[in-house]
Length: 363
Image (spheres, rainbow, N blue to C red):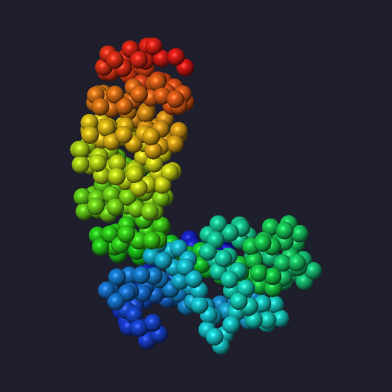
């Protein structure tokens, strides 16, 4: 694909300068880059605290190989990891479709949707796939393109702006993305990683987690508080990601396990399932075992069963916990009685009264 070739020919920073933007009134850093022999500027914008916020690039490009289409003047914006964010066009140079018809509000919304989709089918097409078979020219009309291509791309583009969509998508997801990643990598430091871990941008969160946690799930000391905060956050996917990766050495003391149990109590159902599945690997404090036991009546059957697996995996069950669990064997809820029996019948360190109840249990 043309833009894959551009990506390969993309070289890194030639120069950078500092200046204060009149347009945005924010501190910016300009990088003059070379892309297959042609230079262009990529701008990094900073906030008032002099922290990098986003990249943007002003683009003026043809979107046809003839004079049928107007050239496009557009500014594309990316986050610090090269994920496309949005675009802007000058009011006096609007985007146009076939026959120079201006984009409508619906067209702009559709284009934003197209550009946000990094997995768009447009990535699989070459320019020559967009040729009108009757005129042998690139076409902005989906209906003029050959059958197989037409059926594939119709839902991916704006009718009357096929090649515009194609060109802008490849600019949004092309060579600039790789260079942004390289530039951010060079600027990566402790403050930036803290910001990433505390961000609402899930790309930042996952990137930072992979930076501060090693393959064994050990967290660099400077970031442990942020990582544990994520575990307790409303960001369900980040919390689950942390729990799946983090080393359980951080949950060996009674205080640490108490904090973990409090996280469980506030967590979503799916996160509760995930928490219990790994808690079975912990040697729990007696007080935490009792808290789990006391909370069993609040759990649905699936969580009840998973919590019992955690309890059954403990080397020692406190007497209070055993007494509470014994009561289930004679309770009216026979499903829970059976669950307790199946979970604990092979659990050796039980008191004699409990063992006798298990021996005499009848489904």
